[in-house]
Length: 467
Ligand SMILES: CN(C)c1ccc(C(=O)NC[C@H]2N[C@H](CO)[C@@H](O)[C@@H]2O)cc1
Image (tube, rainbow, N blue to C red):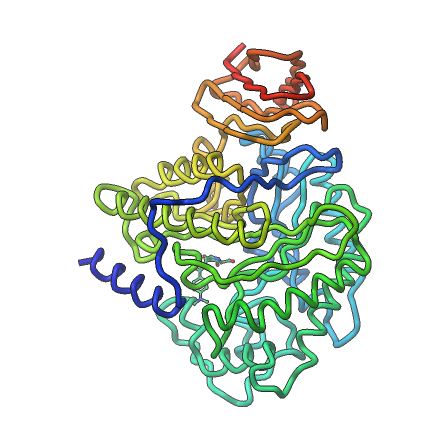
């Protein structure tokens, strides 16, 4: 019965999205584009969304500490963080930017930078903003001054948090922002200029990789291709221009609409020009939440088969969109309740998916609890073991193939002289570090990083096994 329900849901959404769920045959080859570091090395990003607690925190910062970052690195060797920031904190009043808030964000960025992390700043929203209800009980992101409900209702008695998106007041707030009503054309311009203020603050910070322009965009009354090619594309173009007016080099990450695309349906996001000198630095940053799991099935038995099928649709559709954007891919969110049967297997499946696509990823989320790496008492959940995999943090060439097992890692790339290849090796599987099939390797036991200097041209295949 569950399967019938979500097949019907998916078919309905396929009609809504105006797209056809991609067949698994004829999928394009993995996108040959990669996010690069300042040396030009291809980055494989592995990290967390930090943090869900930011949404309601009085200071709009994570309820975590610097020691928590140390523990995360010690246990999983992550090198990336999707760090949540909020428009309401950046621009508390129209045209006024809170530099004290950005300085506090910079403190977190410094903590990550000192540990070799790459930071993507995520202008996060869910349900528009905290002011959709009088008590702030739901929603985060947009400031109160940009929230126009026109007196329409937002019923706080909802079966799940997602259904707030369907409330008349929430739809209206989004319709004003996207200028669907034609009554508040100023809002998108404020948003783009808020990003300019953020980019001006962090443009010279070596730890800041780039900017995720909007979390899980929702079109309100306008949905699917009409939303993505219309108001969403307009916001992205305006924001790209504002960011590039102060920061010519930061990577810019673009998300599709969340509904449908998170589950595997195609996005209609169009190509975006990057007005910078040099190769474009625009990336496609979808989220992955397979519908069978979202509807309550576990990653077991026949639901696992159907989930894998939808993940195949997601992969093929994401690759097609990345081809259209001529952009590398970053998986900005995936996650689930780690107490559910099959959860650790799903995480392993997504890690393998990312390896096959050459894409990095950020797990949702770093917060204590059943979804995260540590529960409310600080005990490790199954996520730590599932996510602590050997992976190439940075590759001195264009990746061709990445395959990890518990006690081996194979990385194939076309060397281009951009620098050495850095590989994280977890203690489980590689207690004394690793042995490499070619090149000159040095082992940093403290960081658990094997740095390999290889030929600077031609195809290189590194196989790493326990020392
Ligand atoms: C109806 N709409 C617009 C909708 C429904 C469901 C999600 C969602 O599950 N998102 C997945 C996760 N992403 C957020 C944070 O970005 C988490 O709170 C969700 O679990 C998003 C949008």
